[in-house]
Image (cartoon, rainbow, N blue to C red; front, side, top):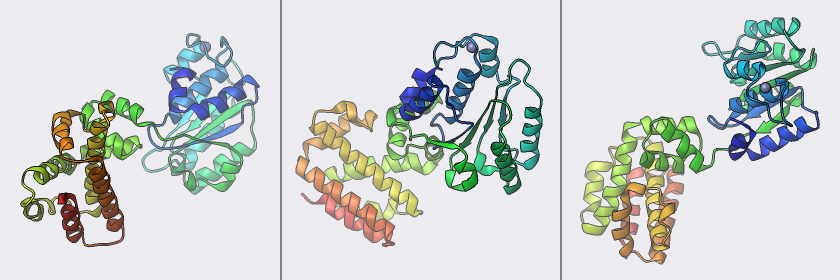
Length: 328
Ligand SMILES: [Zn+2]
């Protein structure tokens, strides 16, 4: 993994860091904030290599010297990673870090420390880290990683350069999910719902999520083939499936994605489909809807989503939506 690879995920962050490396003006402390899976730890390790490698070419570490290799294998004496033990990062862990740093490095004075899930620091640990940031000893870089930047002390933020990691673009999230064994059709749909990798995992694991996907197909097929029965099926079979408002919201999002897919078929842009394993069915349904009608139906779904947020009775809301989708 090099800067180029990271640049695909986080162009702004990589630009900032490589510029500072070029000018030899790295900050003493960075806060890397952003969602799960956005590359915060990879970037911190990359920065550590670029900082410590003695064979580097411009801003790029060589990847082969003993510094680079020991960072890769997680046992460089001057790179320390602190992670939560159980629920929190405790003061003893930060003290241990300070103790390590009071010794001179084995081969250089330079040191890097990375605090992962820094929002999990106890108040005492955070204050202890703050003191550490205020008194940089040898040339040191601190990388403070968090998914919840609002939980960090203002005083820590004000002593650090805060770099925000953008959510992953959907295609990169799909790639990451499939690499972890999630099927491509499921990864596509999930990445259309969220750009946070841990949320995507959570959704994929839910049993009702697979059912929700099936219900979208059933509902749209029902509207096409047996429009007069759709309401009965809805009342008998579906409403019990979406007990939580959040589940109904996701169902509505999936339905919206389905109609968008129909629009993509009509616009002859099949490579943009999200329900990639349903192309044949989508093509059949697309024949029966004009673009104008599809837009109207999408608007009806969006309105239903908004009203769901405003405490409307879910059953009444769904019945009304189905009636509007059935028109025309
Ligand atoms: Zn190297």
